[in-house]
Image 1 (cartoon, rainbow, N blue to C red):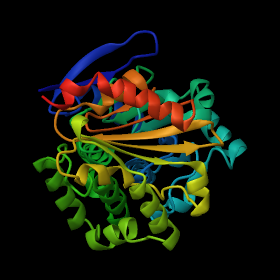
Image 2 (cartoon, rainbow, N blue to C red):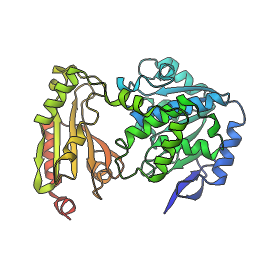
Image 3 (tube, one colour):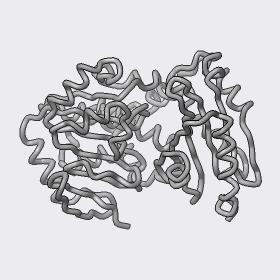
Image 4 (cartoon, rainbow, N blue to C red):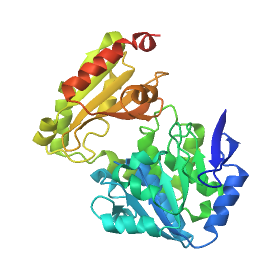
Length: 361
């Protein structure tokens, strides 16, 4: 198995290197060490609607780079779920939507920009133009498929469980894991926990568990983290879950189940960002189902947000890229539709007919 890791000399000319089993090659490591040997003004960027892995990796890298003496700021494209706001250094995050002048100034003044848990600048929404105009060098750390070529250094490995596991590796490649304290370990553990579905997804490797063991040894309190992330239900969220499950449509001939949630239903139960996290996975708990989706209306943005999950070899990444302007991983992806819910579901049902053989191998 060979995973590409790229180091780009500039945005016109690039040299492609390779590393085995996700290890950064010596040229990448040398370049990063050289850059970080001098004080830098660093901006760290997650994708729009950041999840646990995005925020965990950004906040962990923030702590690491601060410990090395750099000036560091995390700039999130928009808000993120309440169940992540207990994380160490969360209160330092700049919200691009709410603090636009401060966020733009941070990006403009940066001498180095890390982009974490995404690999194309389109994934940051309205922040894209600010990043395109930035004069700083970029370092990308990401585990999604088909990475872009905007970064000076790219550490990309689609087999990794999470970007947080990659950030741990990144620190290890720099031979500085001694700088990982309890707060950094907590953020890394949180991202690995959430992106592996509590260590149940196929991307969870023996190496993942060894990394997690190291993080616990360094002070991550696994029980407390799990409680903070998963045991924070409100009555309105549980009512919304009930609506979602009552809306579930099961298509046994396609081994598929999908959920719809309208804007009116979200409003009725006082929807907050992150409230639908994990809802899509309920479809996969049904016997015989290998493909699950949730369609969520966002009237403000004029879209239907789609989350897709699968088990086995059915690639929701390919499905989302082909039909719903999205992508992600083989078994977890996202997409969007810019027509109504009824039109989106009608389109989906027509598309699904062409996948019957792939869903019934």
